[in-house]
Image 1 (cartoon, rainbow, N blue to C red):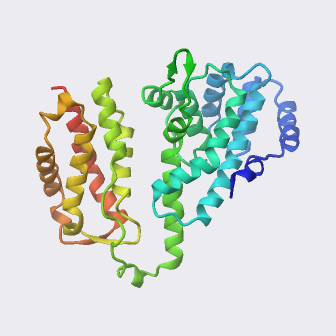
Image 2: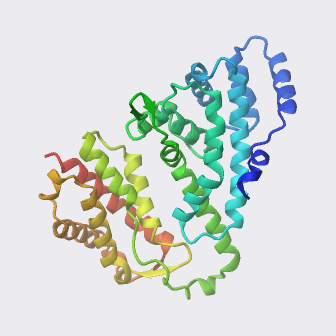
Image 3: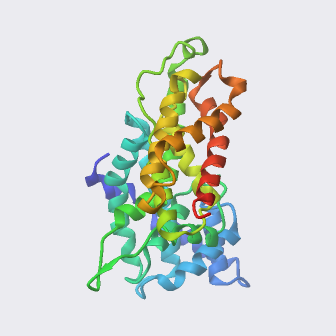
Length: 339
């Protein structure tokens, strides 16, 4: 799918939807407009919870331009749901070397155009973190459990700034999109990759697959998390820690590939120490040299991995087995930085 097909990707049958909305409206004389719209969206399988939808509409209703209405916002939520299914068709067809290539490709081919489109219905003073929050809500799969709107807003506000230079608003749309969609696209990518692999790998073949493609772990989210903490000194949400460690492990381990502990442990320790160290500002680097970080990570892993050091495990199994120890280590490390 290419950019010229963007209009098809976002097309919805607005007349049919409006007719259906009117039917619900006629049957709901005692309900408010927002309650009717929320029920309309739930019936369209947008979200499972009416209260969740009402919270979102109530927050964004005053940010819509005067030429548009709350019902227009509802149509855009439905359009986003359709758009997501179109982008997933593309994701299924393409062969990506890794998640990061998929992320950059999908954002450039699909979501940059969508971002330009959706901003037209909102006021110019809407903040970037409010857009990134909206994208996370709009594109979250129907069956995925989500935090409350306030929790998502609080998570995005400190990390998605609205930047001005000489009274001119700087275009940070790409950063906003990545903040709002990275986790969703990663989950879609993993789901699609797992499905493709399941179609071509038999149980007997699975054990024969060797790790020949990945040479390092990518911890850019960890580095960014550390930088954020060093500059702002704000508490890091648990969800952010979990996401950064999952991204780090998923960048190396692949479903269907078999790994031995001794084959990856040294590179894991070195890469994790590198990303943590490079995320530190100068005031913290002296007290946390890379050699010390490597030693501490090694101790943590050796304490918690005795039971499977001799095992050969699938990539997804290693992610599940390692993430809790690494999350606990990273959380404790960040907490102790200012002590």
